[in-house]
Image (cartoon, rainbow, N blue to C red; front, side, top):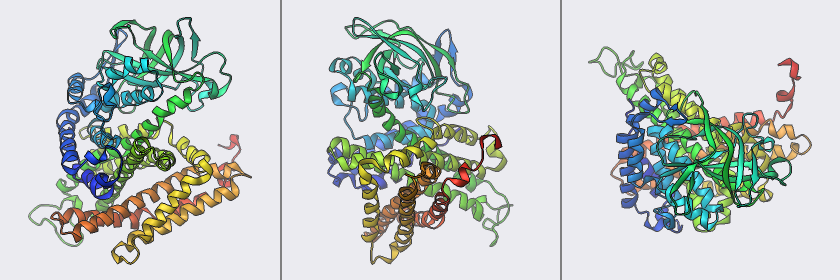
Length: 591
């Protein structure tokens, strides 16, 4: 049984002492004072620990069941979903015009982190609905918005995204699902989609599928793809539900993890759908959903790691084995708690320094989204576009690694189902794969995002890091942070220069190093976050903060990251500079 407790103290630190949201000048942030965010986060934390976390193991053990064409969710999920709706948690940052509360996306992310840590599989039902809501909100007609959004805001109707087909994952140009236009302006959708999270369930009255399909006249490749709204139940003119649409669940996937979420094969047999956005411009509309989803998946990476870390810390303080090499720490006991051992400390420090750095990085990313949308800030839009593959790819890779490290603290007990560690590892694994596998994120970063707008955004990031380091000149306390960050930033720039000098004449030279570049950049981003957090902690101590232990612990954890994790940047640069030859050396038949 999970004992998850939301780390609202650290969230408040990031929101108010690092990001300083009340002073950020973003419309809507002026209302986000400490008292307000504390009330929201504390309430969400209570829901997480009391409602969602107790169902995490239930969902894992029971899973979902397909009965007579309907998916049944695990016991207790329906009551929990009703509680989420009643509490208004599904509507937090949605448009008030459609029943939302209009709060910043950043606050929604903070709340979402807690919900994911408590029960990742459960949270996906509303998380995917939010993505579908965003796509319809951005690209739908007034009539479509009025028809679907009020019910999706409350999650009376939930949403999905349908991209992948049995023969076609990332390469969507190979898509076979067809959309045949009808005289009434609708389309008949025919085809099969796989790996559809929350594709069907018993938690809502209707499921609104957003389906990519090819309509006539679009040509080959992704340019011919359009996006369609395909509801499970057709909606009458008065908003009531009509007849069942011609779609069905072919089967439920048997998965490694997230058993509490229904991952469906969806069959569309001439199902009635309506165009969302422009004809043959479906990828643009879908990427509204995908970009939000990718930040959300990055959040999943570290949120599950947070839950695993909490379990590992509690176990390390309780489990007794051996003695501290410097002498008995608990002489009254037969052995010392394993937290005294340096290697256990190493694992816990790896976990803590990653999770707290990742939280700050993701919150900063959500802040950039708010700034781009609410303040119409083009620079913020460019920067979050650059950061999205890093947030998704790096944080999910390291999140899984962190969950495995937390499992390792338990030794053999971590490998059994008597403890929650196996589930954390299994649940975390999918985040590296869905919403664009991490290798694709690395290719997107190096192949598209670095050169976007003439390299303007990556250069702006380099200048941001340089300015951060320069702002601490003369502060000896900050030297362990700024010196390490400067070195890592230079290594990142050297990697970018290697791509510029070699990538055009040999594209494989760049792409062979793309994964290392994504990790190198991820480490630099977390180094930047830790530098900012250290400065905020020093400032709090200088101002006589009452909770000295928290701020001193923050500084020590940051020093650990800079000393023990940031040196990985040199390794990633060395790999990148070997070019394509070591990667491409073998002929196909030599594998």
